[in-house]
Image (cartoon, rainbow over all chains, first blue to last red; front, side, top):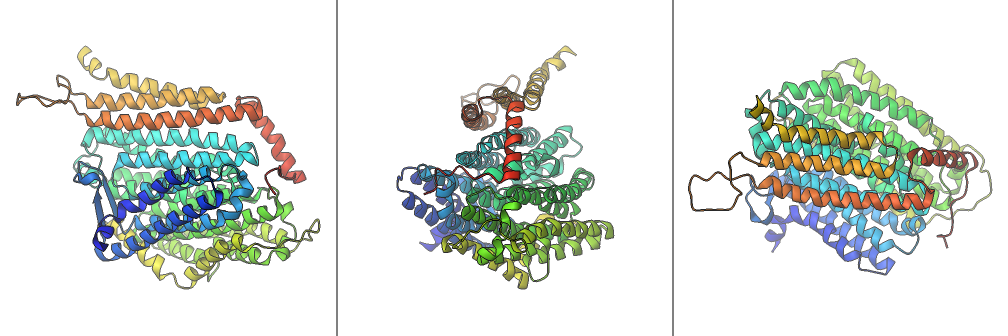
Length: 497
Length: 137
């Protein structure tokens, strides 16, 4: 019995939210549909923890879908690399489902809750499937499942603000172009190798070099995924989509959606292609590295001048994605490990910050701007306390998770790229203190503009407390994240470097 | 010369269609025309896949007795069947969003909409306008 469960884990972790989403749409009672969603995300989380333990023993689990053997059939692979985004997605989706209990009716009204939860589960299933699959075309299907579901979720923000519709439309069009570019790339690679399985693809690509279709295919794939991951010049859809989405949706998307795409980026760069290849080396050094540095500064500077808080956090996400791609672009074992550490920590940090800010919006019942925040810190101590800890973590102060990722990133940069890049990283994280301070100053030091009494609701802050706890916990004892990230980097980079 | 040009004929058409589609998506300000462009863009990719599935002189992939039969590759067709479904879903979602945008803004021209948004955004930030509270009990 247990054996059957263990053998089928890679598919169960995708099927659980997918099937439940079909079921939830039929439920008319709001509370029951929330409860079922919670149950599905809880089961997904437990399954992913089981997978994590299993991967520690067997290093890699392969599942042949429909029992068609891998190079021909679709294969689901879970190894020490893909388990990191799976854990991120399943844990954040569990926490944000708890968080959404009060926030969802507040944002979208009582009438369509169960349909929204169905989309919510579909988005989660798409994201987990994206990470689990070992088939390049199947990946496209999951990419579209997750992005269509999240577009619909973003559009639900229209009940509050009609700009959500335009945000969702732009997200849809840009996302669809990105996914189509990825398909063109897969098609070109398929035309020269005749396979879609990622492992098989990387074996066969080693024998081909200097083929123009290969270069074009690589370019199309990378560009498509960079659109989805919101790497700097392709990030236009992100700030609007995150700021007009319903509160709970912002939390889910900000913490998970780009992480899954960044994982795919790493897979394409290091796993399908090879770091020793000149093509990849040049792409990393002359395209991704400069773009990441631009992202770090552009994102931070846009955040400094922004007055709308949700949009400010979205701009800061662009800068943080810059750190992760910077870590990938250096291409050593230590730096790729640092990239994965930051991927995990950023999910915790941004999840926490978005939860804190959107719950302030819930109490205020207003769009959250800097002026609206005045003096609220004293009114809502728990939320404010969590907000401060997450902000410190974002800036990378010691004893928080953000410090660990900055530490490893800077150590990796110093050992290979020299002092300038490390200086730029430190400088941009110092700049990020400006916008964090702007918010903290408004919350704590200004006098409230009008007298409002706020009673914090435990249902709103419980998941915020949990996520903040982990922000601090992983700052004190980061061995779990660090070890699994180093394992992941060892698999991706291999012995070539 | 001519035969080699005929060999890449399909690919030429694919990339011409692709560029037309991409141009429409980027260049047009009308939300509906952008969706038309997106559909053309996706269709060009379908044609690309079908083209490299075809082997000159090969039969359709239906098993027959003769041993030396060359079959065309059926896999790209199957992949494209999936991609068509995804494309239809994308178009449907896009069109429904355009409908909603039209009913909320009274326009589907990007310039009109961003002008309205800009005014609204400014009002919201400076005056901290209250949310529409009809959904809050």
